[in-house]
Length: 281
Image 1 (cartoon, helix red, strand yellow):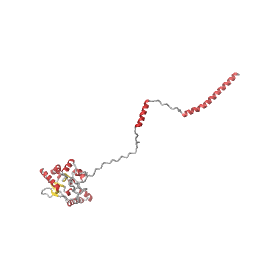
Image 2 (cartoon, one colour):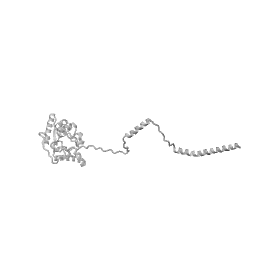
Image 3 (cartoon, one colour):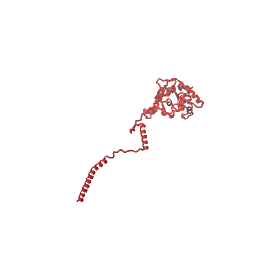
Image 4 (cartoon, one colour):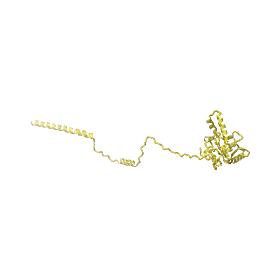
């Protein structure tokens, strides 16, 4: 009988424990799930690292002291326009200048005044060829010096009146027109050889066309002598072969212009034509 009572008590005790375990499980399972979903909220303690700390301090200092730069834009930046200093135009010396008349530029762009008339004189004895009287004496000196060297600088064409210049120019224009060339082109071709009236140095009496016994003047001893010595008397080869693009004239080995001794010497030393010397080129 007692054994039966003990067995009954043991069964009830076991049942009670099972019920308590079930209740405990029911309570704990939700708590475990909640804990995992929320995660560990305990702050993590970072261990001290000397190297990392020093590097961090340097980086922070660099970021503090380094100046901020503007963000780079991918759009092309406008390049500021650089203005080059414009060359001042050279002062044009008029033929009427009392001191620098010898440097007057005379061409289609800078013609002579309509009323200009130089004072003339014959260049050498026995010749009716004339130049500006201020130039004739210098030509005579050059002529005499060349003669001592066995060269004869025969004056062929000096001063031209406006009427004579116009006749020469129109004759050259008609020459091209008669070949079937248009009037405009004929004028252009003519102007490279014979300038219109008032646009020629011959009209000012400052230039001389020089010839010799040979028709091929460029291969004569006279031409060679002039190239070597004319500057000593103030004359220059006015239309050189290598300056045609600047002068606008064909090469004329016979055409010698008076510019004065100093200017002629400087032009020869620098290999300049008159336009370059005056700053017009």
